[in-house]
Image 1 (cartoon, rainbow, N blue to C red):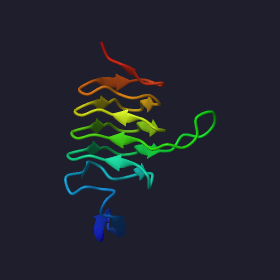
Image 2 (image 1 turned 90 degrees about the vertical axis):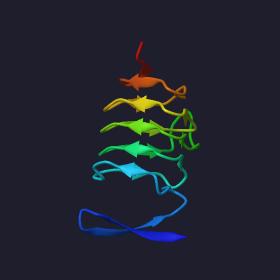
Image 3 (image 1 turned 180 degrees about the horizontal axis):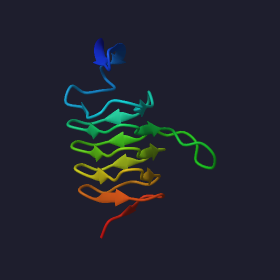
Image 4 (image 1 turned 30 degrees about the vertical axis):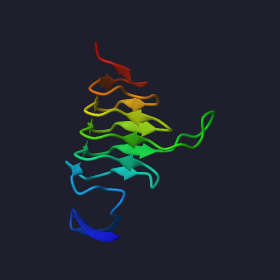
Length: 114
């Protein structure tokens, strides 16, 4: 099922299964969501975020975002990883490993905040 999503005056055809209705694209500029990424409910994605496959030593795989995940500006989430329920990814973080539920990660590569 397709629906139209209006972003900055442009109409984009988006695959309904890719973006649940509860997805919040805070500032939808420069957001890249690979076709194989899975998003849960109430996911918030800020501008210039990339979700996609990882190449090189660990090719393939898709990021899975569980419910209530927040990803801040400029973050990159790559590979066969899971962002646990209620976790947060800081601005400009590069996430290459799983993030535990409720955890906040920052940096490149992303590490948990203690």
